[in-house]
Length: 378
Image 1 (cartoon, one colour):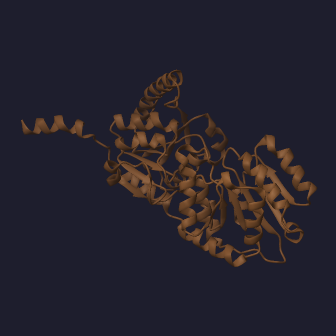
Image 2: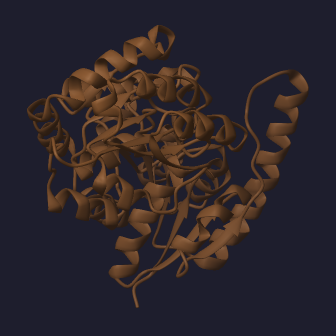
Image 3: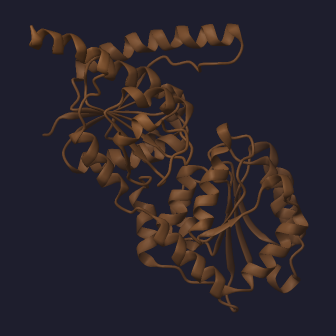
């Protein structure tokens, strides 16, 4: 049995899905894997049955004076917990996947002199990873360029791509078949791990406005917030559109495999899965994402030819319906976008990140090296 590896990640799918993919690779290589996260990860526990899970305290840094003080206090408590945990596990490497819950564990790993790596999924460095980067031995990026990465840290940065689950990779292996005039058209609408109210308002109206002959062929899978499910279902039912709705789809790989077109947000994991699966997409970035990172993710995917960006501020049901009518009636354009999306993927991201992280060295700050240098000189 190889040594233990600790993964630290925030509790949303955007952080946990890449961690899950790397965990699978590490387990395959014979490592013991520990996941340190927060309570939100419970929803994803079923997909990680072989992994020991731990929680440490963590708070967000920033906000008003009271919130900031509370966040710092939570971080300090988490740091003590993480140091104890890491001393007990004695891991061969500690890999962080972003989100504030990763901060205490990664800071503790750096303090203990353990080999460390962080992975930034987005095209803009997240705030937690920006804080951690100067202290880490390796910085892996999901996109070729990561805005917000300091010049001083760029020498330790490697573009690995975003790790995705094996089930998603298998979709890309099976290829893409564009819509057939005699068969149903599968449309998948995803709003990220927390849904998207705007898509629940705009997409049904856009699909209803399509010509009847096109509308009759639609088979819709739409993720929606619980409070939106009733209204969305009523619209589809009243207009004869076959639709399956849920707050969260457990079988996203299966639905993605059937999809002719995806309408979705532009979180890093979503973009990576679209690319790995080779599926064309209309991307509607979440406009309030930190540092507008979803727009940067969407632009990179669209510039590679895998899809089209539709900013939410300028989006209406009529505009979306016109675009859908054009795309769904142009199978050649969809097939070309699918091929370009597939070419955008880094299919070996999990393997590469696991290999690099296991070979990473502790990051020793210059200030920590000076005493040793003086001792050698004496």
